[in-house]
Length: 109
Image (cartoon, rainbow, N blue to C red; front, side, top):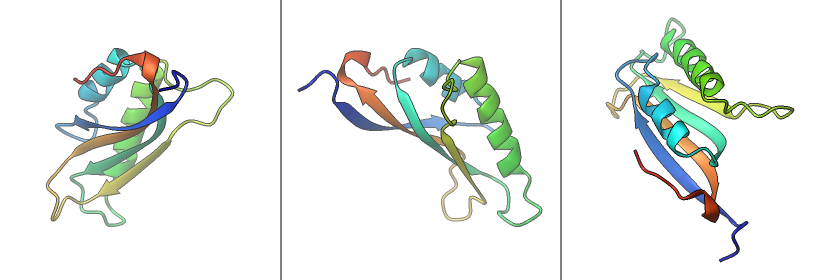
């Protein structure tokens, strides 16, 4: 396989609440060469117009990306897509969609 060939990866990072980015930051620090394409997340809010958990989670994730130096200079930040309301899924957390390269040695957390 070409060492420059990208490999698609989806990493799941659990969260105890919309501001919890510990698992996300741990994963990002363990995989510094992974290129984040987007972050998909689910919050326990109700999904309606009075659901502020999506904005809170987006803000927390953006700060986590800043703390781990994962906001690319001169490029737009990765898309952060948050969905409120866990009815039917009961999962709160984030899924990272990444492009990884064979030389970066994926490390699961």
